[in-house]
Amino acid sequence: MIKWAVELSEHSIKFEPRPTIKAKVLAYFTSEVIGNENDMQSQVWKMFVDGSSTSSRSGVGIVIKRSKVDNMEYEITLEFPVSNNEAEYEAILSGSRLTHVAGARKVHAFSDSQSVVSQAKGEYEARQEKNDEVLGKVMGKDGQI
Image (cartoon, helix red, strand yellow):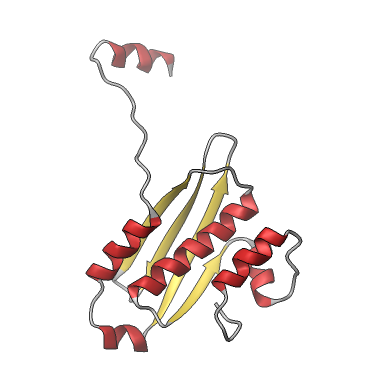
């Protein structure tokens, strides 16, 4: 690693991290590139989410599939400290916002977090009030994601 730092310093090259993309900007972009509204209402969309948190940064990854060939992939950096479970909840919340703005009427959500999935199914109770609040935002009026 130090060897590369020395090599790069000779050429005035420096590392710049990927800039964050705001969820609202992604939602507007998604709404512009999505196709016919009638097709969207009859389709079942699939949303795959994952959240991660480390001591230095946190973020979420979202993949939305409208059809076998139509995939939308998003990476959102969280600019506030969160735990791993909170990052998973933020992933679900951001993904549900994106699919809603894009016009999806029915979405099947997939997550690798057993805690989040079990709480969404009603099998577990959210221990932290904040998680319960986020889950309430994600759930629809009929009690389904």
